[in-house]
Image (cartoon, rainbow, N blue to C red):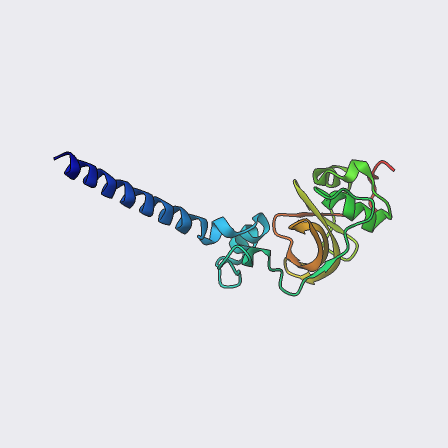
Amino acid sequence: MKIKIMAALMAVAVVTVATSSAHAQAYRDTPLNTMTPQERMDYYAQGGQENISVSSRRARRSYEGGQVVAHPAGCPRRLFCGCGVSMKVFGRPIKDLFLAANWLRKFPRAAPGSGMVAARSGHVMYIISYLGGNMAQVYDPNSGGHKTRIHTRSLVGYRVVDPHGARVASR
């Protein structure tokens, strides 16, 4: 009798472990859980997943048409998007602009265009050229994997500001 009970408990344990790990793997591999925050914004902006590659963890780091460029000189190795954009715009790191949200506080809003900055709480990038609609070619420090890239990005979720506008950053 004891052997039958032990065998039944072992069978239940094996089935439970097998199904829970399979469920966890399936959950991790669902499209929204393998996307970066920017990819999720692009996903919702496009209304579907036909243009977003999410088949694996490696796919979420693919930036088609993008180019990885050198880390901005004088900027920290982590959390450096604000520093990198201040280097691009002003030629030097400005500590007040290391926090991405400060770009929204210190500069006036503007229409998308070359030389403008796209910012949201948590990230900032420099617009090299405006491509129309919601798309722009950007200089994007800390765009993912602690890399700096020049690539095409959606401006959905960002506010565009003029870094040479009336309000001025502390220099």
